[in-house]
Image (cartoon, each protein chain N blue to C red):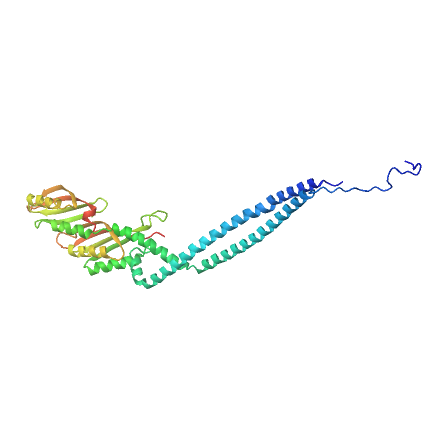
Length: 184
Length: 178
């Protein structure tokens, strides 16, 4: 637009008019503060984490030292001994004493009885024997003597034969109570 | 063109939130794990120290009582120890006046994979002598330091005239299943 009559309606230069509104920068300040706070916390945690990492490394070192301190040979010896203790007590508990059983048979023996042979079996819990006797009465007394022992559960007379000498040859089987007959 | 300050502020808050999830949360999780790892290691160190001290004390005791322990170990040895078994049975037979006519040691009854903590070794013996000698031998076997359980016995006279009796014994000796 031309300048008419020396009156200029529009300004020559454009001038910005700044209007300050109170609190207009607060969102920026809050945002900036939060960003800074996040970086600060992250930095702090990172330092703390590094400290923990070093502590873990130190603990690992201690474990390694302890591992080197182990006397593996001694440990092995002790493990074997401990096993042996367990096994020995287990086997000792079931240890068999046939001498106890034979003493019981001896004490129940009649003087007129003569053993010819015998066999004893742990699995069957029996003692089989072949013997000679002078009479049936002696055989009966012998069976009664065995039965009277509480370690003997049963006595079976299997076969009685009269020999030409007049003696009786007989076979018998003793069923015994394992706990009372051959255990101490 | 400039963004309004409110938008800038909001963007900064959003960035702070993103950074919180991207930086702080992983670090926090890592720290939790690290603290747990330290606790575990401390517990491990404490228990290992205790075990090492116990082993050291037991080893001292072991050395002090080594004679008794060696004797005890021969009850159920770690190995079959066949030669020792043969010589001790032979010695017991001689000491008790029996003649050892035959001895055989068979292999293990159970295998290594069994849950049994020990292995069994079959022993078969043939002896000749008197009944009192045999009973004395039996008692010696029962009292022997190496545990032997007799599972069967049979006795019969050598012949009609002699007073000698033939004894046949089957037994079990034990050794550790390692």
